[in-house]
Image 1 (cartoon, rainbow, N blue to C red):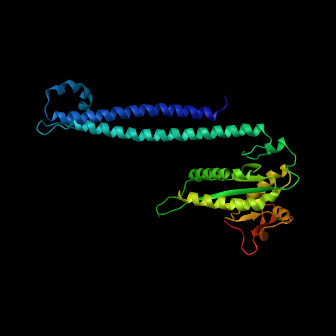
Image 2 (image 1 turned 45 degrees about the horizontal axis):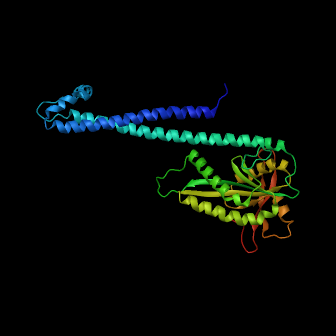
Image 3 (image 1 turned 180 degrees about the horizontal axis):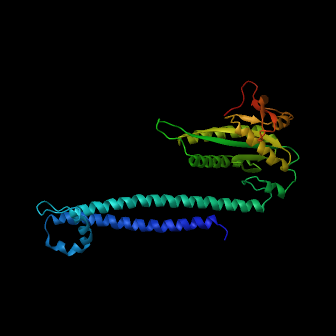
Amino acid sequence: MAYNKGEELKKKIKSFSHILISVKISKFVLFSYSFLSFLFWFLNCFELDWLYLFNWLFILPYKIVSMFYRHSGISADFSLAIIGIISLSIGLICEFMSNNFYQKISDLQEELEKYLEQKKNTKTRRAKPIPLGADYTQENEQHSSSMLDTNSVLIFSIHPHIHKIKNKPEDNELTFQEVEDWKQRINKQILESVKSSLPQQKGYYRKNLFLVYKNFNYVDDFICYINPTISSIISDFKQYGIDIKFNYVLSTVTMISEIEKELDLMDTILSLNFVNTFILTEKFKNIYERRSSQKYTMILKGEYNLSKNLSISNVQPLFIFKEVSNQGVKI
């Protein structure tokens, strides 16, 4: 039988839910029993005759306690108080366990939601030649080899670097999972923010978020749009104690068959870790310079080996924007 992650997660959620219910019932019983123990211990100090009617409630616990605590007959009998303390302690342990099980169930439910969303996106990807919001893979390319447009398109790729703002020396750095969770939240906010710019295609390539715009001439407006967007996101997450730095690259292609190769190159450029600076490929520079109206000039950042294979050299120039009177554009 094929492994079904969704069904497995549902079984775990159901199992933990049953345990959680049992623990909560036990907690309620123990807290109630503890209250009764303290109440009857207090009333017993007044030597009320009718209390013997409730002896059956405490016979077994009383015998167990008497193995370790013996009443001398002179001082007050604290057996019921001891029973109350023990019941209360076990009840608190159950409270701690119930919180842990509740958190575990919440985590599993969140994981299930992510799995179902991923499964839904996979089905969408198979149903459409170029799905919006899905990962770009070679499978997408096989569905269509037609040109995106007679003109070049604009490709933007971005990768966030996450660090915790340490206000105290004893503050711990984020775990790997915490970093991934924050990246997911940040990328989600970026996608939400760029909705109005109507990217033709958006998705992830090797964990880097990318956007494709059909008209390359949108580039100047895009930079004016993305700069305050990124600045706002950096400011927003500082409120949560999270420091974000971004790497981003701008490039261009003319045909859909070229996108994956270009995204692979952009992934290598992102790994060079040029923080908070628009890095431009040579393809981008050549197309941008052909425009009749240019808001920016471009200067050489340097030449870098962009090959993922150490035995093969692929040295290419990279560029940054420069305004007439300013240094390279940064956020």
